Amino acid sequence: MDLKAKMLRDDALKGKTIVVTGGGSGLGKSMTTYFLELGANVVITSRNIEKLQTVKKELEEKTGGTVLPVQCDVRHYDEVEAMVKAANDAFGSVDVLLNNAAGNFISPTERLSANAFDTIIDIVLKGTKNCTLAFGKHWIEKKETNKTVLNIVTTYAFTGSAYVVPSATAKAGVLAMTRSLAVEWAKYGIRFNAIAPGPFPTKGAWDRLLPGDLKEKFDLAKKVPLKRVGDHQELANLAAYLVSDFSAYLNGEVIVIDGGEWLKGAGQMNLLEEVPQEMWDMLEAMIRSKKNKS
Ligand code: HXC
Ligand code: NAP
Image: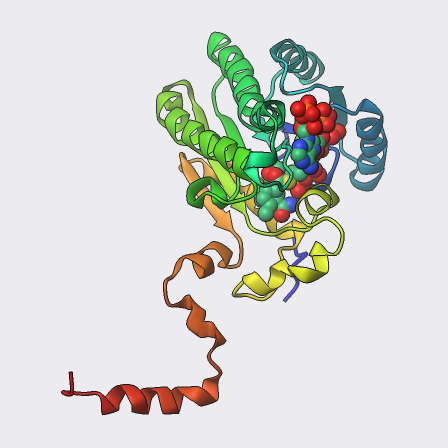
């Protein structure tokens, strides 16, 4: 199986302009690359303009597409409004907002300062709100339609998770925003969906979630029924579909792409995966022998 196979036809995103927050690294960069290969113009934003300029050069050379790098800290509404203007000035209009920027680190919650908790909420929830509100107001005021917002959440947006409580809290808020606006803004021709990825190795996430030898200690692939982490192209394929017109009837959905990871943690008897095949004859015999004895 070729996990790097590209799913959509070459011109699937031709004519679309897509804003990817946090588009200069990790999953944002991988999705940006594929959108460019499919013919879209992409605006990549983050706090670090030098990094974005380097990525622009690299991806334009690699794909022949057009990238506009814009410095924008999603926590500040004035910077987000300036980014919306820069994107519209450059391309005339924007069709897709991909809220991908995030901040996160592991910590027992009682060790967090109020500011540490706020920092994550501000990047993830307030940042997504800032970008969504700024683009939404613009699209509604200009009566522009056929727009899509795609939010990157996590599976713990609906399960919750210890040791990443600010992130879980914020991602749950983003998921609620996704589902709420999918209904409220459908009348303006704006649809909302979300992706909840399982483990897809990136430097940004791994340095903060699995520092030092935690990487070896907690092999995330082992938590996944499919026994592997995700390939970035698998996520990029799903994201490209969700921002394309092929998914025009999908609205308010969160799609999990995690190899079955969260369900493995949830099912009460899933721990029986640990039972070796050769033990099942004995276990069955033990269970059958109890028939009519209780
Ligand atoms: C406790 C910490 C801390 C830590 C920072 N703080 N790191 N507290 N443990 N490890 C505290 C600081 O002391 C400060 O509080 C407050 O948090 C803000 O820290 P700053 O460094 O001033 O913030 P800033 O420069 O804005 O950086 C934000 C950041 C940083 C989130 C802390 O890591 C960052 O820039 N991250 C962006 C990229 C990222 O996180 N990527 C991973 C996404 S992965 P005080 O009180 O001292 O002022 C992801 C995966 C989901 O989301 C699921 C995967 C399976
Ligand atoms: P990453 O490379 O660290 O991506 C985070 C991006 O957000 C960076 O490009 C960063 O750029 C940007 N960013 C952070 N704070 C910002 C701010 N205040 N304003 C603007 N941009 C900001 O990590 P990743 O793994 O690719 O994560 C991408 C998305 O996937 C996130 O939403 C994450 O929660 C989600 N996710 C990842 C995984 C995984 O396994 N990797 C699993 C589930 C969900 P700058 O530092 O330059 O600002």
